[in-house]
Image (cartoon, rainbow, N blue to C red; front, side, top):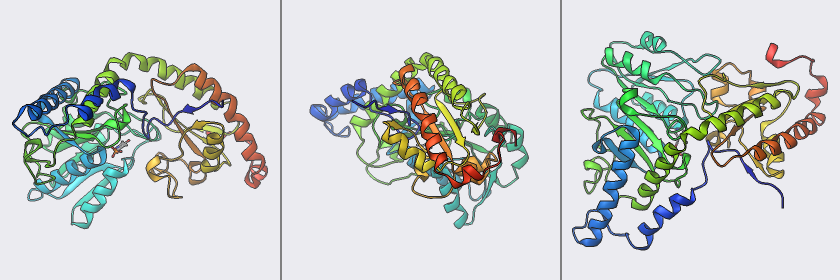
Length: 394
Ligand SMILES: *Cc1c(COP(=O)(O)O)cnc(C)c1O
C-alpha cells in the first residue's frame, strides 16, 4: 500500500481517538439540553460546566470569560465587529496587520464599508512586527488592535504580550486570533494580557465546527446571537455539547503534549535543511519565532498547484498558499506581505506537522519531493530560460 503522509495540520487536524472517546457519551447517553431542569438536562449541564472549566484553566482564564462559538472565524468576526461597534462613539479606527487570516481581514473590510477606518500594518520579511510599530499607528480615535498570535501560512509568532502592554497604555482594546497558536505553543490569556482571544477546535484534534472567544471580564461587546440566553446571553443557541466536550479534551491533550513540540520542531528543521538543498529553493519567513510544525518553502519555476497534485499522487498532503484561499489564483497575501515576489509566491508549499508525524514521514517527503520538483521543472519553459543563481541571494 502507498504511504500516506498528512502534513497539512494548519488546515485541519484528524480528530484524535481520545477526543472521539470523550465525545461519544454525549451522543449516545448524555444528549440532554443543558438548559433543561430534569436529570438528563442537569447531566448535560454538568458536562458543559466541566468542559468550560477545563478549557478556562488550560488557557489561564475564568470560566465566565469563555464563550463557545461554531468556529474560529465566528469568534474572529464577533470580537472585531463587536469591539468596533461597542466603541464606535469613541472612535472608528482599527489597527491590524497585512498577514491576518481572511476571517480577520474580511471582517475589517466589512467594517470599512460601514465607515470604520482600518490600518493594515506591514510586517518584515520574517512575518513579524513590533509593539513599537503598533504604538506608532495608534491614534486618538483608535479603539481596537487585532493582531494574530501566530500566522497560519508562515508560522511567525507575533509579540502579543508586548503589543497588549502598548494597547493598555493607550486604552485601546487588544484582540488576538490565536487559532494557530493554541495547542502549538503555550498560551495563557492573563500572561498575554489580551482583552479577547479566539481559538478553534479543529486545528488541535477536535472536530470542525467548534471555536471559542475569550472575552476578558469587564470588556463589553454586543451579543452575537439573540436567543435563549446561552453563553451568558451573548451567543444564543443550544450548546453543541459533544463538540465542546471534544474541544476540552483536545486542548487538554495538546497542552499535555506541548513538550513533544521540540521533536516536531526538530523534524521541521531537518525537512528545511534538506529541502533547501534543492536548487533555487527558499524558505519563506524566519526560522526564529516560528510555530514548531510550520515550514513554508518556494521553488522557483514551479506552480504550487501542480506540485500539490503530484505530491498528492504520491500520498503526501500539503498545501500551497493557505487552504482558505486555495480556490483562487491570487498568490498568498501573506507571502506578498513578507516581500516574496509574485512569481515565487506562486511556487510555494506549506508543510504543517502535528504530533502524529514521524521521522518516517519526513524520510518519505524527502524521498519524493526532489524528484517531483525536477519533473515539474523539466516541463517548465521558464526553468530552461531561467538565469542561474540562488533566489535566496537576490
Ligand atoms: C483556521 C484559522 C481560522 C479559522 O478557524 P475556523 O474554525 O476554520 O473558522 C482563523 N484564524 C486562523 C489563524 C486560522 O488558522
